[in-house]
Length: 126
Image 1 (tube, helix red, strand yellow):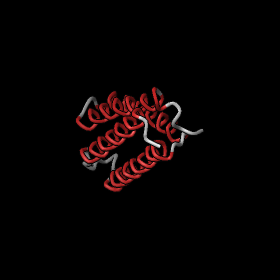
Image 2: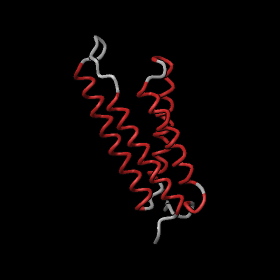
Image 3: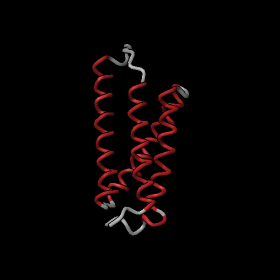
Image 4: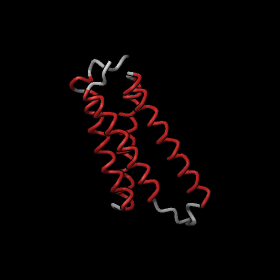
């Protein structure tokens, strides 16, 4: 069975968003302070990397294996990302890594929109 056009766009946009997330992690400030030690920064970076890999797996499950639950997990992850991003921007202002995250959230929202509309509606199994 051929991949529907909206599912293709969902997959492409979500993978693009995760690439932006990886870029944001790479460009994040890793300067140790009294509040954040080098070990904490390393742990945060590793956790972010693992989360990106898990989310990539979810995109693959949804787009290629036609699973519905990973799509909803991606929606939940987007909501949590937006909440976190609003807090970070409120505390530190708009920096390069948070600016990339804003673009990533917009791309993710567009991809998820495609997954719920058009020819994608009948693709996902419950």
